[in-house]
Figure (cartoon, rainbow, N blue to C red):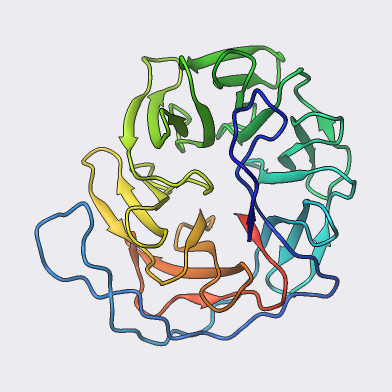
Length: 332
């Protein structure tokens, strides 16, 4: 997997993005793999508890879902949909510029993404089939890392219009922008709204250190939440809105963790000698997809089952199997 350089939004190259590969045929879906993740050891709460073990084999679930992802499989980064019930892959964008970091709107009728097709990285929205791409921002400096509000009528994103990247909120109804927070210096990263839309968690690098912050939308300034997060990975809330899934670089490799926002408890969700990146929760909240190279050189999509917020032993499954990369998935 190639990583684009992480630089300030004030210069043309903007985002740490996971891209690589190109394919023409449908993806191959694999059967259940008995992958050990863990059996919890009774102990007082710890920031980094012992991961689970003792695998069991589960029946294969019915895969009736679609995933967005991006890849440079046709020579430059484009956006695709993978239907996991059929293995069909559909390309949604096609041009000679970067298109990526895509996410479904809350009602799944639109897709939010970043593109360089007009010469500068800006925010776009297109229909769920790739039709009618519409440019939402137009600036001399790049804009990036967009995310939808739960109501679908606003988007948040980072922009390098000031000395440092500013977190902005765009009202899609009125076309009005609002600055949520502005730092003296630094580079913005991925972000996500809480399910009720009242809070937002975002990544930001200051003084060479990348951290996750949380703030009330329209409230006081941000406070530090996680000091060992990874910049190149998606963040997602659980359905209850009391915890997030994120990627930590605390250990030898990057693993997926769960953080209970109010009391600061951590849970280890995946552990492997390869990095696991970009967690995304299923609509029902009982499964989590992520990207990993644990079975080879290419980034493929995996799934881990969850029960009451805990990873189900033996439930890690590889969903794709070909010679190309699947990166930054978003679930429908």
